[in-house]
Image 1 (cartoon, helix red, strand yellow):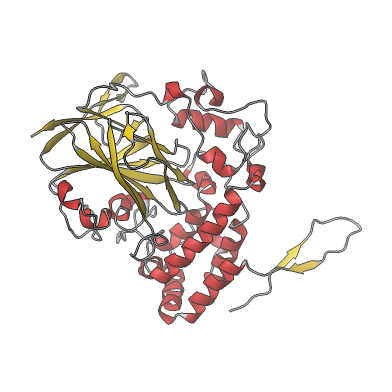
Image 2: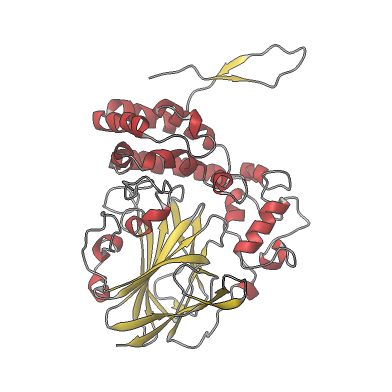
Length: 428
């Protein structure tokens, strides 16, 4: 299917309007050609538009079929995300592709489309092309103090809150390394801002010399603590268990973690996106599991377990455990001091996140808080996987009761800052 794409210049009194026809980016055009050429894929895309619920967020009402979808993807390729605000619909501006596609994820047709290897291979190509823009100086046009800009008061205050601060008393520059004398605060691209670095005082670890205490590897909200891991399990069902063999890409160290424990936590789009070592130890090895570097099919970017009750359309957030087996993953195996022993950090790139960058090297001796790597763009999730034969106990976290008084709250469901104590470990 082809449509005339007509773009008009700015309206002026004495300037007639001129229609300029612009072709799709070659990568997007090939994606559209693939959908139209492959019968199974074409049917899945047609079905997901027929099965989709009413629009849930801004921009979704403009997407009526796969051709509209491709045109929106084409536009996003040269557009960096803006800061939309704090509500769910406003925050969609920070993850523009997911904001559009999430409407179709919770349909049988969408599940078929977004788990198809050929579709995900083409999404991967789109993300690589988009990454070129997000790492270029052209993307600095969203780093300003106007409405929707990342240096607006609303955006700066939101980033302070996500870093654990109080914007009434603290500023962005109190938390992050930046140059406030520069119009863009010293950030050379959107991605440069996204992977911004905390000042050392705000990523310092507690109990740095206690090997029985595990520190938070990321600023994140704890999703689940799961015991008695199975080497292989049915990870695709609702309320999925974790399947080590799939999560760790059939690594030869999988057996070490059978019967062990996993903690998983999710990073929001405004969180600090670098990973830091939760233990003292030595890097045994690292791996990236991706369609570009691994023999398995391409990672799956937009699929999640279907919600038959249609009560939660945020398919990725409610499929945190599921995505540990299907999305791009960074594995960092660390031989920690006893009693911990071998531990694995798993960084999982979600949705628009197509890049997990590992900076730690094999054989590197780590201290708690040393950098392991980072996510490039978007909300993400991560896991710490512990071997069998350990007793892993969550540490209560500071919080508020219903009356606003200081109290302690359970770890699961809590927002934890990087470097804070979250678990104790002892030999069973």
